[in-house]
Image 1 (cartoon, rainbow, N blue to C red):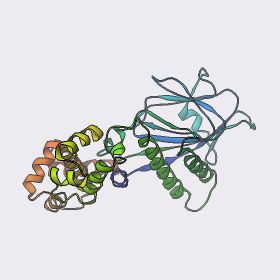
Image 2 (spheres, rainbow, N blue to C red):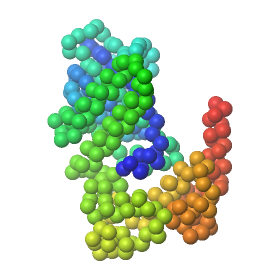
Image 3 (spheres, rainbow, N blue to C red):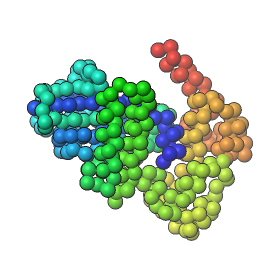
Image 4 (cartoon, helix red, strand yellow):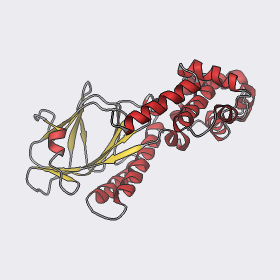
Length: 309
């Protein structure tokens, strides 16, 4: 999990937090990647477009993956205001709706964006909504993290943004663990990490991507026959073992080419290919362009972004 999240180059924006009382509702537009949050106190309704409203209680945490528009509200039928309008009134990391009350809702949220080139490694595995209740085995730990995050947002202290970013990413990891541990866990590497044999093979591939892995070696690591391993791997991960290996190698290659950190021949060796031509052939099949073309396009995009184009 650490390898994949590192490759995603997460960028975190936390807050402002929300305190609300009375009747209220805030509508958020669709957005990319992940929003994560939880209730420090109070209750509210979370209404994701196309799904039934869900009541959140104190200590509950939630994660939204590439979601459609959604609403946070005191009641499911309250008339919502646009989030941009509401959040524009933030002061000292906090937005207030209604008068102060002992029954205030206190909500802390953060948005985690990823590098678009590899974002699908995670976002393709996530449903629009994951909720972890406070009484879930992981819930108490998540509630503590939300409380810490809300405290950091509400104070002005040296290193505050750095602490907020790290807390939000720790919260993300714990949410992913909670989601993967459920009986209806997702297809893909996220759920497969909890499978003893398949998880062992995945960790081996990630630890030494340059090794010339064969189906026989991976099956032996998992203590399975080749046919049983191939069937189990595809059932849990969604693709055959050696196809997953190629996809992971190309994800690493996209990241390295975008950062211009290695020559193409060096990158070929680092990702398990004996020649630059073999690497280029595999890259073109998966990505749709040659490594050199991809690197040039990434440079152009970075240059345009730097100039604000």
